Length: 359
Picture 1: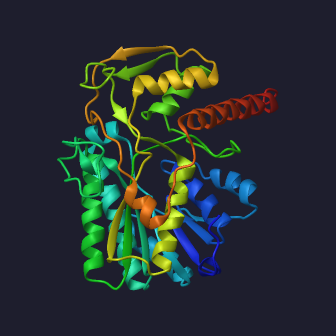
Picture 2: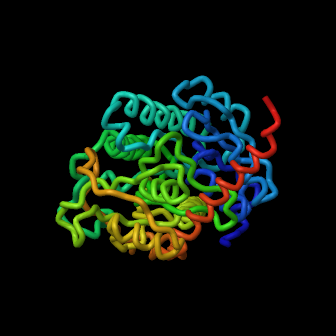
């Protein structure tokens, strides 16, 4: 815990607070003394996730169910909450595959919502802004691990492009403002809260690797496909830097306190959030099988459009300046993800049992 007097009575707006990383960040914010409100229209999330957050924290979280692309609705949130001290902006569509098929949807949603939030931050004099960015901004890098100075390559998807553009929008907004921002480029969040009360809930067929693994293992999916095994990597499958969602969440609190304590050395700074370890898709599958005791039914398929071949982080800057240190290892990532999937199944079976006599 990093509780300090600066946290007391500070209200933080979390956009996308009902999402996977948003909900875990709300838990961490509350555990560190912040007051939190959420803005999430639940188009890609479930509103009842905040009930689970309440069970963990004992705090009721108010969610404004608004479309952040509608400026007047965003303004109304700030008019009702004039004591907001900072904003953590998660709200965005995030499916790489969908963004390849529907690029205009991603540009419209991800950029317009960001612009509206930034306009309100300026209008209502909210000085501290943390932006949820992504390692996708690096594209297919020439060298790994990537540092914050690694040049951006062309994005492999519209989703990645919206993160590149989003970073530029935030930077330009800060250049002509007294506000300050931190851009957090995180790698591949996985796992779930150790309580198994909150975790990742894909809408439809999962595109992210770990929920695809757990849903296949539990029987929700009959078969999982590995997208390519002919890449220039040690086993032919893509390499990623998998980081536990609770470690990602805690970094946002550290970044927020970094701004609140005026430690920032520029009006817009950037940090990588990854473990620094590159793990292949097939290695993740092997670790899950070992941790869960489940044999996974999977097959090798063709490469998937939009996928980067290999990327992992140099996280020295976040460690040295934010004091951030990932605490969850790969086994714990897989264990909490599997525990969450088992809890979802238990809840589903209980619901069916309770409603079996209803027509």
